[in-house]
Length: 500
Image: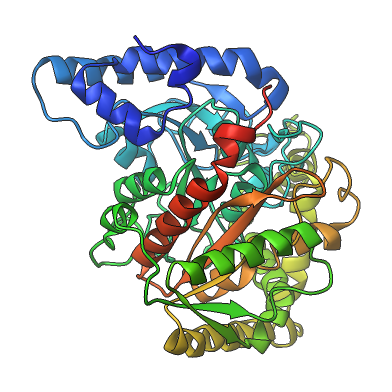
């Protein structure tokens, strides 16, 4: 029997191997993680809902399969924390909003179905910025999540609950969604690995929509190999999603097992540094680039001028799509209903419900998007933003003619204090300045840890970007950097993370 303190620090791949070999049972593993959640989540607040009975039932089913001699999948019995934006049959899905408080979906999202089919044990649903709108998980209607490295700091957003669950060893795997950086930015500030697959690479069916042309579900883990194993489980074509790519999943697991940058051309974009970047973040990034050069990569300087316009374009496109998508929350079909006392019109009930159910950031983006789409402003704002999006896509295309992957800091700074940017939306939006261009172009990207910033001892993330449907390049480069980094400096999360 493995000691619980050691068990929760095992990688997902190690846990799966031990379950398959009979060294651990899935029930033991699940109980250890449930106990860890019970011990620390009151402080961290990574979870909004724990599905204890459901998780143990899934774990028992895995143990019964093994007892019958059935072959187990590569992640069978491994616990996972699921972002509360994916519908789960019989389990609450709130999207971090009061407007869906208590809503229990009658169906599973495609990602949820794929996880269950792979015998991954879903522990519960994680906290998030309401409707995935935010960079800090402070916009959740159910209170903020703390960063396990320092509970007074943000764990990133919108998927801060998923990243915090990994960093606090409450789960070895998690699922996030990335509209402008909401998988990668939380990974960076918590010292974990997060991947935004190619747009359309993972089904959006059953994932509550924020910005349909940008939203993308993806894997979160503590190692590159674990992220690859999870990526392979959730990816693939889905006829239920019209934007899903009908093509084979790139060989991500094979790439993660054979990490190398030798002979690869690695691009460094000049627009991703300068004013607003923390000195320690740039120091760790420069060390990572030097490490890749040592490993045999050729470093190429790139100039992508349109990237400077990405923030402005994103904050017109995303709110416009959010204004359209969130119109369905009208108090008539599901979720919260306020003021329905028989004296008010349907319009009044809808208005009162939205006033009570949506938080300030969601209201801000709905108003901004509705204005950008309104008659007389559509071409000037939304139309112009889409033209900038085309320029960004072209800059990426030109860059990928010269290089195999692009690298940058994932975020300009390490985790900032909870509350510091709450009243300054522009400062908050700048947290995603390196990640936004990738979503606008639909490319694949990963964030992985590259050490701690010397000035505050908090994690720094390295972003790797690959062309669409070349997701395997992320894992090939990421695995090589991770192995070299760990050999040289050790794994920050396993060796230097503070105990809760």
